[in-house]
Image 1 (cartoon, rainbow, N blue to C red):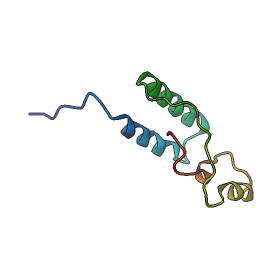
Image 2: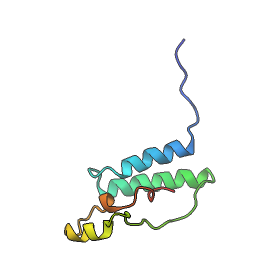
Image 3: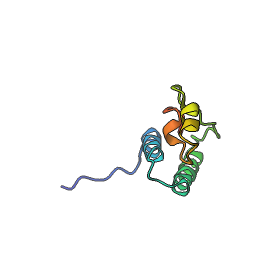
Image 4: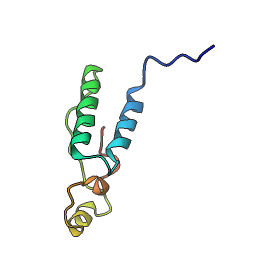
Length: 86
Protein backbone atom coordinates (compact mmCIF):
# COMPACT_ATOMS: atom_id res chain seq x y z
CA UNK A 1 0.00 0.00 0.00
CA UNK A 2 1.36 3.41 -0.95
CA UNK A 3 2.17 5.86 1.82
CA UNK A 4 -0.33 8.72 1.96
CA UNK A 5 0.97 12.28 1.97
CA UNK A 6 0.17 14.42 5.00
CA UNK A 7 -2.55 16.99 4.47
CA UNK A 8 -1.30 19.30 7.20
CA UNK A 9 2.12 20.62 8.01
CA UNK A 10 3.13 22.18 11.35
CA UNK A 11 3.61 25.95 11.16
CA UNK A 12 6.98 25.69 12.97
CA UNK A 13 8.29 23.35 10.26
CA UNK A 14 7.13 25.77 7.58
CA UNK A 15 8.86 28.71 9.30
CA UNK A 16 12.10 26.75 9.70
CA UNK A 17 12.11 25.86 6.02
CA UNK A 18 11.35 29.45 4.97
CA UNK A 19 14.15 30.74 7.22
CA UNK A 20 16.58 28.27 5.65
CA UNK A 21 15.64 29.60 2.21
CA UNK A 22 15.98 33.21 3.43
CA UNK A 23 19.57 32.50 4.55
CA UNK A 24 20.54 31.35 1.05
CA UNK A 25 22.89 34.04 -0.32
CA UNK A 26 22.17 32.92 -3.89
CA UNK A 27 18.54 34.08 -3.72
CA UNK A 28 17.84 37.59 -4.95
CA UNK A 29 16.13 40.23 -2.82
CA UNK A 30 13.04 39.83 -5.01
CA UNK A 31 12.96 36.06 -4.41
CA UNK A 32 13.30 36.59 -0.65
CA UNK A 33 10.51 39.19 -0.73
CA UNK A 34 8.24 36.65 -2.45
CA UNK A 35 9.00 33.99 0.16
CA UNK A 36 8.40 36.48 2.97
CA UNK A 37 5.07 37.60 1.51
CA UNK A 38 3.90 34.05 0.93
CA UNK A 39 4.79 32.91 4.45
CA UNK A 40 3.30 36.05 6.04
CA UNK A 41 0.02 35.36 4.25
CA UNK A 42 -0.04 31.74 5.44
CA UNK A 43 0.77 32.78 9.02
CA UNK A 44 -1.92 35.48 8.94
CA UNK A 45 -4.63 33.11 7.71
CA UNK A 46 -3.57 30.45 10.23
CA UNK A 47 -3.88 32.97 13.08
CA UNK A 48 -0.14 32.77 13.75
CA UNK A 49 1.04 36.13 12.36
CA UNK A 50 2.64 38.27 15.06
CA UNK A 51 3.37 41.39 13.05
CA UNK A 52 6.51 42.85 11.60
CA UNK A 53 9.70 42.54 13.61
CA UNK A 54 12.97 44.31 13.05
CA UNK A 55 15.90 42.16 12.04
CA UNK A 56 18.89 42.62 14.31
CA UNK A 57 22.57 42.43 13.52
CA UNK A 58 24.40 39.35 14.75
CA UNK A 59 25.96 39.66 18.19
CA UNK A 60 29.47 39.07 16.82
CA UNK A 61 29.77 42.54 15.28
CA UNK A 62 27.54 41.99 12.23
CA UNK A 63 27.00 45.68 11.56
CA UNK A 64 30.70 46.52 11.72
CA UNK A 65 31.62 43.53 9.52
CA UNK A 66 28.96 44.63 7.00
CA UNK A 67 30.44 48.16 6.89
CA UNK A 68 34.01 46.80 6.69
CA UNK A 69 32.98 44.61 3.74
CA UNK A 70 31.76 47.64 1.78
CA UNK A 71 28.07 47.49 2.77
CA UNK A 72 27.00 44.73 0.36
CA UNK A 73 23.34 44.66 -0.69
CA UNK A 74 22.79 41.18 0.80
CA UNK A 75 22.93 41.66 4.57
CA UNK A 76 21.87 38.07 5.37
CA UNK A 77 25.34 36.86 6.49
CA UNK A 78 25.54 39.72 9.00
CA UNK A 79 22.16 39.20 10.69
CA UNK A 80 21.40 37.33 13.88
CA UNK A 81 20.35 33.71 13.32
CA UNK A 82 17.25 34.03 15.49
CA UNK A 83 15.83 37.06 13.72
CA UNK A 84 14.22 35.74 10.57
CA UNK A 85 10.60 34.62 10.96
CA UNK A 86 9.62 34.65 14.61
